[in-house]
Image (cartoon, rainbow, N blue to C red):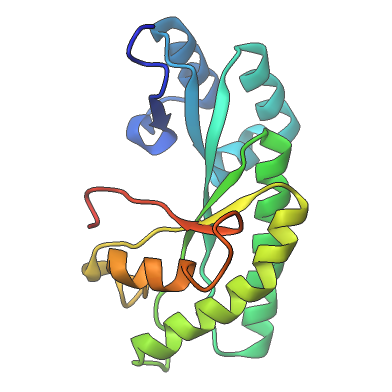
Amino acid sequence: MTGLDRFSINQMTVRQLSLPELVSACAESGIGKVGLWREPVQAYGLRETAALVRSAGLEVTTLCRGGFLTAAAPAERAAALADNRLAVREAAALGTDTLVLVSGGLPPTGKDLGAARERVADALAELAPYAEEYGVRLAVEPLHPMFAADRCAVSTLAQALDLAERFPAHQVGVAVDTYHV
């Protein structure tokens, strides 16, 4: 046991590395787990990323990020739900059981954070059963309050837990980044 057997490095921690460089660095350092981000995975290719990670013997612990579920307009909400369904399928293809969600901030004409969080809860109610079909759990991540307006209406651990507790634990949980809480 190296002490690294439970350690997973998030891709954004070393964002200066390309996907192949990240995978190589992890393998060479004895880090067997990695949390990936959608944008670099999409740029490299989903199938190519899955093959690269598997060939190096790495486990994908999380895929970041889905979410952005606070839109009030029906068309924007539908687009967000569709993107999150895609993110669920991407997570499953990468072999991870966790999709990290950043809730989304306030809509352009909104100022009600509570209402935004309720829209997140409504979206989770639609997405959680879908994600479960793919063996993926949704993990709500609270972000520092300075991101409440534009990125994340879920600003505290208590708010994230409040959302997660509405669903079975195998469907929805919480992801914690210590910077944000």
